[in-house]
Length: 254
Ligand SMILES: Nc1nc2c(ncn2[C@@H]2O[C@H](COP(=O)(O)OP(=O)(O)OP(=O)(O)O)[C@@H](O)[C@H]2O)c(=O)[nH]1
Ligand SMILES: [Mg+2]
Image (cartoon, rainbow, N blue to C red; front, side):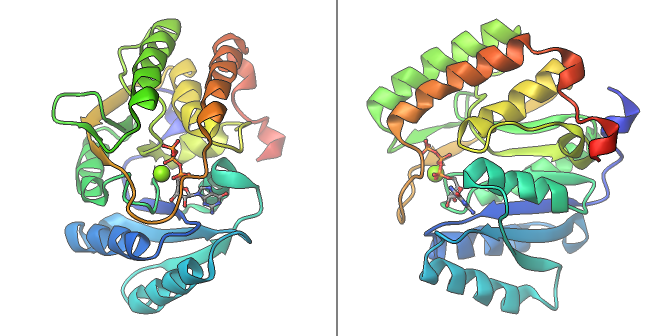
């Protein structure tokens, strides 16, 4: 892979968007801190917006106080809109050599972060990504109709892009920070999670999939509507046929 798109592993910036999570957000940060080496964590950036609930914001503030003297941790009030915009803001702010994008609703099991870090140390040029379809992974409490749509979607898009990856829509990944900072991201809503797989694929970046057990959130609500899932096809089509030269930002854009 192009040297300008990655550096050796130094540490990882953990990007955690949150809307209405309380104990799930807390458990996310606590689990990562308890299972990872402090020197591997560059920072926790908790990304909130003006629709974030009061209880969620209070939880985030409590976490900042709890970890302030242990690690770099802060709340960022997002500038770009929606779930994708929140993560894009995190990409811009990240100071680590790598970033981990995940959720705060425990649908992205935080105990996997340790494994992501170990793999990123050995493969700093690759994207490490979770798959619910690999042996050892799975779904618990996932809507049946969504599950069938998901497998059809995953297989179609993988074929379309000529890759063997099994879970392109699951937005739980560790990526080189230089890579994410150099890409011109376009989606601000949930299709952004797919975009974070497809644009690196088109740039020739290799992926490592790790099995993950997805378990439905026990508090708060998803910000994604079922019908919005069909927009993923539009994103896939667009990214598949765009010129490789248009995937990266122009140098003068930063
Ligand atoms: N800051 C911020 N966080 C968001 C926004 N939308 C969603 N999130 C958070 O991002 C994470 C993922 O969002 P969800 O709506 O659960 O999406 P999902 O689980 O990927 O999607 P589904 O499986 O389709 O429900 C959650 O922790 C949300 O709280 C947003 O606009 N701003
Ligand atoms: Mg979710």
